[in-house]
Length: 309
Image 1 (cartoon, helix red, strand yellow):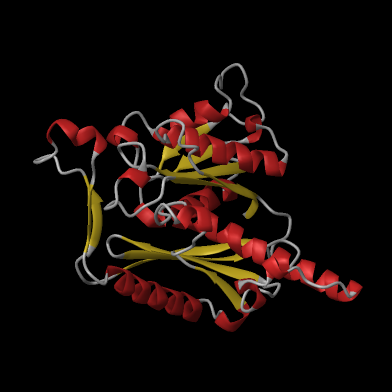
Image 2 (cartoon, rainbow, N blue to C red):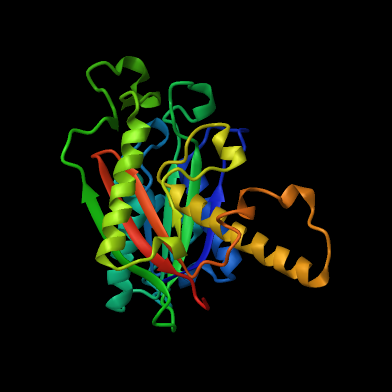
């Protein structure tokens, strides 16, 4: 199962942020990049956690499916795909959980194309107005499908749980929510939680590499703290972090390829492209290792080999 396309979406701030709008725009962006119609999607899995107005029903996936226009009448248009959608709630590890489910669906022939959407927004509709809320209003989407290359795609997904109490969690405090409960959320993060989660993620990567005999020196690790300038300014990515990390990683590969081409043509490199990709990411890696970590504490890892590498 390979990543055919990926895309992210940010709110335009002309209106309160909406999970359905952001996830829909990210999904349409991925479909546009892959140049495939919405009708070709057999399954949509939505893994976002935080929603405007703390909405939990109906399933956000069904609303995203409607927003994208994926086979809205499965009786009239059952081909090429009926268009099944559902939510999968697994916090920051949601995307890799959806990848694991998607592998089973593609292996059994239940679907040919899978769309994963991950969108989080502040319950009040604007994360930038709440200095204590740590996450960005952000959406990401992966379009996945079966590959003819048996060496390409995702390897097994592994989940890890730490044997200690969680020091980061988000929840709706119903005892104190009062009249503003629909627009507020409680996020508890103990001091130094980021360092502890980072250490746990590193242990998960080491365990995964040991189990599957992976040379980490030849592997680009796409970690849980992916950033981009426009996202970093408003908060951390949450469930969409693997999508954002993948896009930044593949941008780095493209930068490296561009530099190689300029060297062949003996052209000077533009100053603005001399960034962090000059170092570790300025190589055409044969494989990536996705790692996510969050509340639980829990982590998930999955190896990924792009086609043609």
